[in-house]
Length: 158
Image 1: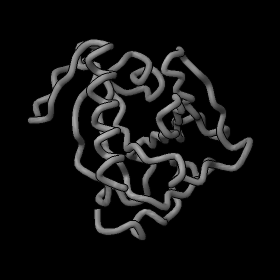
Image 2: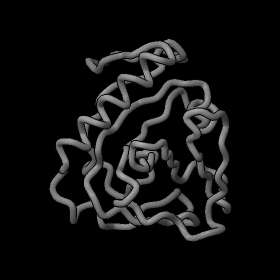
Image 3: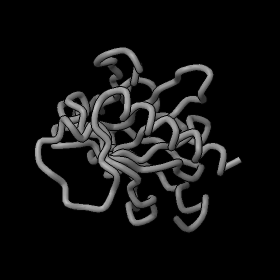
C-alpha cells in the first residue's frame, strides 16, 4: 500500500450501483472459508479487505440491501440493490470499533491492498489452497485469531 491517498478513489460493486469511499489504510486482508461467506460470495471463499468503520463512507441509502445471515457476530452483509452482487459488509461489537469488510474485488485498484494474512474457517474449505498463509480451522479458533490480528492492526495504526 503506497499511502492513505491511494485509497481515496471510489469503490463499489461491478455494476457501479453500490458506490462507497475509503479514506484510510486497510487493517488486513483475509480469506474466509465459512459456509456463510461461500454462499454470500457465491465462491469457494471470501477475499475480504478490512477497514475501520470511520475510514469508510458507506453507500447511499437504498443502494445496498443488508442482511444478517446468522448472529453472532452479527455481520451485516450488503448486496447491491441493482445487480445483487456482494457490495460491502460491516460489524460492530462493543467494545471494539466498527469494522467494514470490503470484497477485495470491489476495490478499484487491488494492487494497492495488503497481502492476505490468513485463511480462516479452513475446515470448511471446498478445496485445498496451496500457499504459505496460516490456515486456521474451527469456529472459536478462527474468530479469536482474526480478532487478535485486527486488534494488533488497530494498535499499530494509532
